[in-house]
Image 1 (spheres, rainbow, N blue to C red):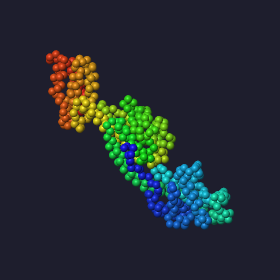
Image 2: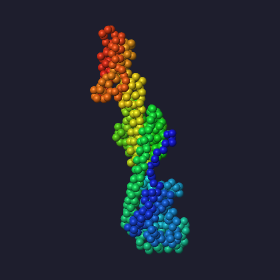
Image 3: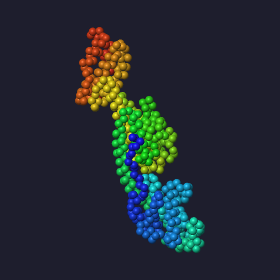
Image 4: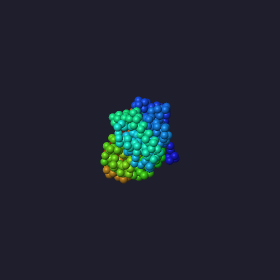
Length: 496
């Protein structure tokens, strides 16, 4: 059943350790700390996973933090503080931290009062981990010295007045962690540069794995689309519903739907598959910017039609919309009907899908267009068979011309004003002649007629029946020459 379809999911790591071993992470952090001499760093992931300096991180702590964490046994408070900073910066919606994001931008004070800095590490545009650095004391800052005492006296730290006084003394006497404003600015710049370099390394490793899963998903999707053997467009949309629903589950998409116009209203695109329930039957009016849209597919963000599209689809502001338009060509004579694959995702997930969605859009649009063409070809073959044509497996244009020959010939007969008794004979004979002249024309250009037309006894049939019906001996029916010129034109169009 379509509802039970499963497609391979796109890869996204749950931990930094999936991309680098914990020892490698700790050694990279140690390399930065040892190079800068005075700023120890650590990394905090979602779920409380923490990566410290490799080996013995306490060897790189400042005297204040060493005494606070080990001497006074307050290390659990420092770990809890780093976890809180990470939760806020990673956007974990904890009520107790609501509205505190700006408290941790730039240089800020830790729970014990010394200076700290944090940078978000993003993966695929999504916040993934937080890099911490700090344990710094500003030189000659009377305000900071006073506020340090106020912080340390906070009851939540559980320090006695003597312990507070000892920590303040250590902070003032520790030259290693004391920095001037210029040193602090330079340290912050280097820390942020290290964060971006580390982020770039993780992004490269992630994209290698991600690309492999994208290829698997695209291959599975293409195979599914090619297997959609539907007798009609209505049946195709039903089969497509399950496939697009499975695709939505396998990716970070919130919406995915196939919109298509009709012969009557070409540019009023209607949601066809029903893969996104809230979009079922919804329409998009794209006539005003169709040509621009065709040459600027993908995200609607920043485009002049972004507001129109989001309003008609009733998308929220935090959704990014992506459209991949194409023209479906089918029928006889052929008709161009606009269509579009429309997808939406959360703005936060747009980075994850930036490279993948264009390829996905092209693959789905191509598959659906092929399926529609196959349905229309089968319809033409069935209609031609109803007119008495027996065809080989390669018959295409001659069949399409035949399907439309009857209405064309009827129009010609009406203009000629021939007697009613001749009408049915002329229609039948006219269609026979279309096939006959088509075969002769195909034979002239070297097409093996036998593969195209298996059986059709035209030559003996049309001459006597048409020339002798309701006419005086030796006279052709009225308008015979004009009638056959129409037949000739219809037939010759099959080998343009």
